[in-house]
Length: 383
Image (cartoon, rainbow, N blue to C red):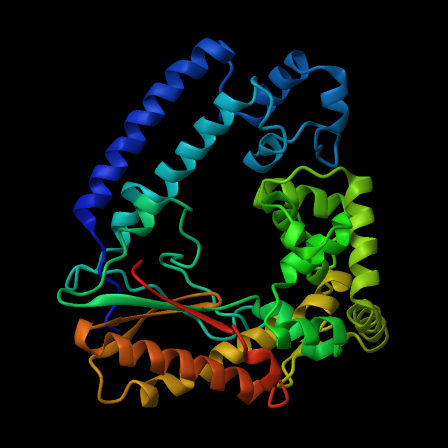
């Protein structure tokens, strides 16, 4: 109800900068594309067909009718091509302007001057919270935009997020000993996966190899195949993998964490037989009532993502009592992160209370998960 304070003056200046960038890029694109409208999928597809070599066109994502896809994700897969780079910059700025520019002003409350996003309960099949009007859980990955979210005068922001929460949940649901023991030791699972995939010692893992391992770890939780993993690695983690390399990484993952691999197969079998899967606290994803969706992927992921959401819900229920006596309030939730605003003199106590509530929320859902609480919560101050 308090809403989120937002720096509207800085937002206006940022929007002006985006508009100037957009105008400049539009001019450059006219020189690059000629009469082609970059916002027209068919026209852009024809231009790509004429411009790109046959080897690239063969790899390019296509629609069910065989046309070249021209959305930003498809273009981003070929971001290393000079012909594509101006288009990507144009589409990125166009997205910022259309979604986060002057349109954002409509979410300014006429009385408070703040954002008051809606967080509907039970709207997602996994039970995970979502936000709309506006969707403040998915802001652009720009420090300048994220800095627009500010605390009330005289207060600071305190953030705490669950570290690798879905992987920890998967470890507990599957009772995979390699994963459970790794977290109990305080190891970083991304580094361990990277070492297994690359065939090197954990201390020899490079930044690129760890980024690739993040794609492999999370891609496995979503039931991705080699093609999907290769695309996610490129778009989300900036790592190039061929489909055969992705398949090899998936195979190595399953050998490294065999009990998780067996649990995933079991989940798919149960979903196909009984047409439903459950989270740790019993939320049911019914494929007959709610539609099939992506059964194979959801059968593996809903129990994990949904159980992680239940941890967050339990934490939120604990917060009012945890913060009692402190001038500190919940400011925002971004998936696995909770953000408070507090007066500086209460900040240390509020941060400790938040961290403790998050650990207890985890143990409320997984009472046997005490060994996995090492490094569970990362706390930081600022936006």
